[in-house]
Image (cartoon, rainbow, N blue to C red; front, top):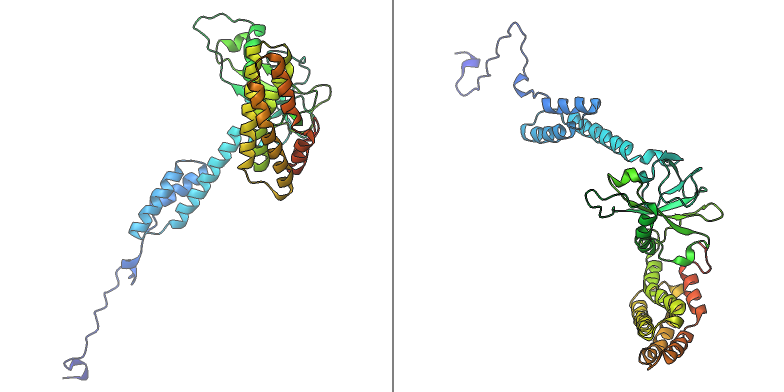
Length: 354
């Protein structure tokens, strides 16, 4: 018995013989590259968006099987996402909106500024081509919105641009009220305008296009004043005072000649709006520089509440007008200006907000 044959000594495993193809000691541990991952990468190079799906499937398969190819799958996902993003930019035109771009009116979006070129001013139907520009460049108009078309009955004849314009006016005025919450910020010569469907458009998809038009001089700044551009405290103030300011304007313009019942309704509207205003102002948080003028405005509005109530209860129109005027005198116009200045809002017609 030799030393190597002694009992208890471990016997080394037999080494397999080499074959014609050569022996590879780690062949049993080799993992193949996932084919789905490779396909995702190839589609990513070619621009196939379907590669996004294959890339996700490949990652799941690799996690379960331990195969190689995670890098291919991730690269395919990134490439396909880049292709999809580039396609979206081309469709929406986002990379091309920095400079002037010619298009039709229907391609405009809310807030876009545009030039109409040689098209006559005040036309009811849209010109064939307009040029979209940055709102800081000289321009002729700013789009408020496209409104849904008219209720056109089957076979209804084209009613003409004048008739359609009359129907569009009230709709566009409502849109302007929401688009420009602070009328004081509008330049004095800016006018609300609209395009109505042409005879050809009437047969397909008639729409109203509402926009703000420049007066004597081109516009050089955006006119939009809504929640998308205003600071929260500016928006809160304008929404709080809007109904009261509108009620006062109607009362001043139409009250002196209105019938007693109509006048009473105007006074009641103003009194209700005054109460709603000071309640809203009282419940809001204000920056430090605006607290004092806002508190003064609240006190003045509360002091006018009883005067508005007496005006509502007046027995005849003369007393209603007299008591409404007294209620108005409880408010100091300088208080409103102080609040506006503290909030960075316009303090004169046409001044831009800060």
